[in-house]
Image (cartoon, rainbow, N blue to C red):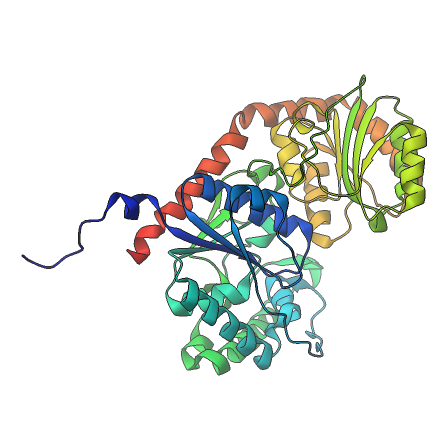
Length: 412
């Protein structure tokens, strides 16, 4: 008989090996997003492995789903030189992440090349993982890049600025990107120096697990970015708190070192409703205060699946939880700390889906809480978003899996 691809077995059609990872440290938001994606793919019947930063331990959700969890070796410690520019973009974050150094690029590329050759995945799904993307591209492994809008910037030369945009200088931006490409070329070979930076560090398929209304790069068109919506809430912990008393019902997911936790608890208690506060890093005094105020405080991630759909107000620093709240019509109070959180919070405020407060201004906490609960425009706008995305929390997981599965044929 003639040539051509052999007929595939049912096993080949159903089961694929998917490797997921994130590289941006042990931040819980990255871990939750990767775990959620991994659970979705695992439940679709695929073989799944997560490679985490060296110090991140397997969480309960991954263990329950039977997901294998491995670690990537630590990054080399090396002095970081300044970029020489006064604005920030994806290029400056890459520089600060290790792309300033030929030695770090070589070390990370080798580490990922070894992992990929050992695992031989059909697809790699990458969340804030540019070194893994580099190795996947060179090795010919189909890749899916995913994250909130900030993590999946428009693929253009140069990358758009996201901070101090009034100072953004295109020639300087192109020069910085060429400098990074030249460093990559010293590891991979000369063709990399003639390739645009976005082509080297962007996935073949690019999924934004958020909604356009909260896009960090609002107004910049890029057809390579597909908005699939926030993935279903992953149940990291075994505890499943429920609402116990009357309204307003307040759900907060914050980090104690980033704000005035005692004042936030007092402000929430002043509403005289029900509250569950997940407060990572809270000290003993804060826990005692919460108990005295009648507020349930959690020191580790718990399931919010029974709380989020009927919360009257959601408080967070401005990460992916904002989009999850928005599609359920839940008004938000954002207390941004990192700049990508500020970008989300600023968009949230501009679209009147909630309010934003500087976490370092605790005197404004209670006023902001009362304002967002009483603002008719916020209620009307969040209701409109909820209607627009009705059922999105279920469809988003299926869309993500379908996108990953669409890449499987690349290796078969």
